[in-house]
Length: 357
Image (tube, helix red, strand yellow):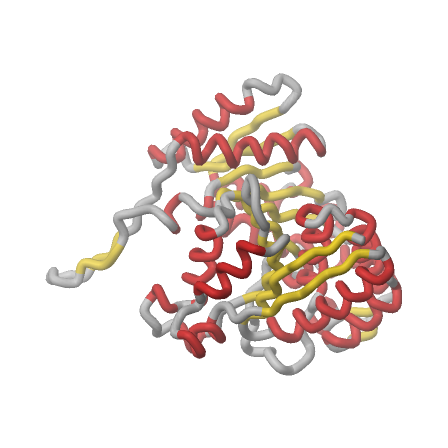
């Protein structure tokens, strides 16, 4: 029997609710598919700051490094926005990514047929959407230095630095190439090379890396046009390769093609060591504790963890099939509800999925 040790970071807001559903689902899957999974829960985000005055405690990071995979719910709350930046939950995320060298963020965006009417776009626009955003995660403007505030002037200023070297661009491009080979062999690299020198290096490096693969089709697109095209004709995309800042924005935009950001998972990976698997959505503190959150993105993140992080592909397939069956029967959480659906709570839809497994 295979044995795995995963760290669960429930985080803030709706995190504990969707994490509770995920624990129950993973236990059911482990029994069905004959593997043992040890779930170690650690504090992370705002809740960790409240106890340790640190959103990413060393104990949590050390445990993550020793694990086979990390399953992260969500972090953040408006009440932490007044803290110094290094104490905010989002800074904990950056610290986690850096500590585990998670340079590649993978965000699949696929329309589930039972939810096609949930999208705010017309059916014919979204019905064939099946794309993946490959986002560089530990470089660019979020990590670049120098950065800071200048307050000893008549007019206060702040500055950040967007910086990449060619090696950083090459390694994320190799991830996109690998994924493209498993799909339709199409990569669209998104940048802003018409005005940014760092984007020109990005474009040149991506071209050099992909030119070694003659069976791949590479296109380039400016980020503003890419945002427009994702709304106008999203099915033209297969693998979108882009930098940290642009990927952050475009992946959330792409998420709404499905009708709810509460439906999409992600994986943050390195070349060796545990990955972090997390839903795309935030902590939604306005609905925290009400048992109405949508746990499906968290469950689909668990599916990615099973498939990519633990190589338990059959268990991952069982989970995704169960999700599809529940949705096809008309069960929904409030964010996905329409006049024909039966609205269930977070825990109730979790129980339905467990029944289908």
